[in-house]
Image (cartoon, rainbow, N blue to C red; front, side, top):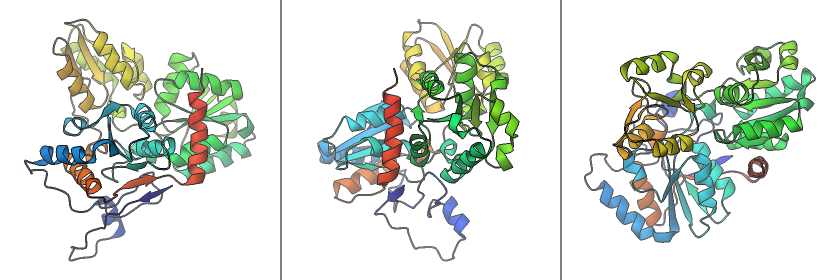
Amino acid sequence: MRVVTTAQPRQDLDVQPTPLALLLLGREADPRSERGVECPGDLPSPSDPDLVERARAAKEKLGDKVFVLGHHYQRDEVIQFADVTGDSFKLARDAAAKPEAEYIVFCGVHFMAESADILTSDDQKVVLPDLAAGCSMADMATAEQVAECWDVLTEAGIAEQVVPVSYMNSSADIKAFTGKHGGTICTSSNAKRALEWAFEQGEKILFLPDQHLGRNTAVRDMGMSLEDCVLYNPHKPNGGLTVEELRNAKMILWRGHCSVHGRFSVDSVNDVRERIPGVRVLVHPECKHEVVSAADEVGSTEYIIKALEAAPAGSKWAIGTELNLVRRLANAHPDKEVAFLDKTVCFCSTMNRIDLPHLVWTLESLAEGNLVNRIEVDRETEQFAKLALERMLALP
């Protein structure tokens, strides 16, 4: 996978910072990460009162040449300019269904833009307004680590029995690995169907990279036991597991998680039930197993949105997912009481890197004929990643 950008880093520092400092500032690239990290150039000031009008004017100038995608977790200031909103896979498919758009501006994170590039035509150019908008979960599984894991499974004599299933929230490299090894991709909506399919192909599943979605789907939705699941830690020799543990397991879960959903706890659930009598707790399946077990309902982002739409007036809800979406749902349903599950504010920090100044800079650059921050997956990676995605699309 490679990231193409026409922006040039600024050279206005009086001192030479260390490579680590440059990385933290978003001005260098880390080849071990699923996201490209480079400075996008000089941005408009966030205090510029004309930002909204500038974005509107640039988008109008581009017309049908641009198609703006907005993930549910994006800020309201960005969402207002999205042509469509949705979860990562829905948006990637929406982009593929818009072949007349020359530029796909993906207001989300890096793996989402990669998926859009994989599914769109070669003539379309996918742009990410801030290349530092990555995903901590996706970064928890690198191609090198997963290849090493497969070596461990091979040495244990079980690789031929294992089918990889990778969550949509993974890099193109991981999707390609999955495609090469006969596996499929899943979303939080179809994880159960994906696991059922995988168990028809083999005896064991390697689930990447979110341990919680894998565990919750296997135990809560498919009736397996927690003992059927083992946790593979890529930072320990042999994943921290014995050969016997690997051979006995049905689900080999990667030690990855969502930094937002991982914050919710059983204490959060108990506390909100005390504060709001009669509340229904609705959480995303990326939450920990004990949180999912304590909740009233569990479902994907789209499930959460539809549940609130169908809920009766006067009902009370505590939602365990990203705060931008929860606030948007609360505003959209003033006849219902909608609360954030945790008392602590919990935005997705990398999603929030896409702000109005970055969007304005992107749209104005494209309107001036300057292609910036293009996300382009190399041919071989795209071929195998697309194979894994197509297996998912073929699921009954």
